[in-house]
Image (tube, rainbow, N blue to C red; front, side, top):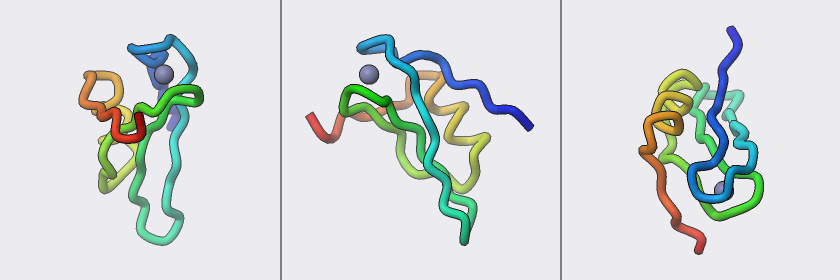
Length: 60
Ligand SMILES: [Zn+2]
């Protein structure tokens, strides 16, 4: 299953996923700026949230 993340809506950089191998929870983050999704129960939900703009800027 390939998961396609849109570019960051704020800076246009690539986004990436961090997945917890133990429980499968996933979060999508921007490589450059402090933008991230909440933590979701699986990769698909995290990708959907990122691609739909359900994102936070908690670090900036
Ligand atoms: Zn960004």
